[in-house]
Length: 68
Image (cartoon, rainbow, N blue to C red; front, side, top):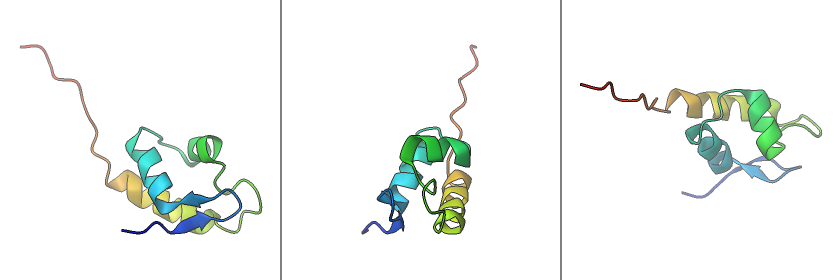
């Protein structure tokens, strides 16, 4: 599947946003800090947040196994 640019100012794609969510990013502020997404002109913020929220909803939490 081809990537779609979400933030043109900082060349952040939907794949990048999904990967960051899968790698443990849990807040939009953290996503911005790590990628620069939506920290320039702000035109992409709505789409970036929607993509990030969707990605977070698909992340499976990995909990440690309890000792038997």
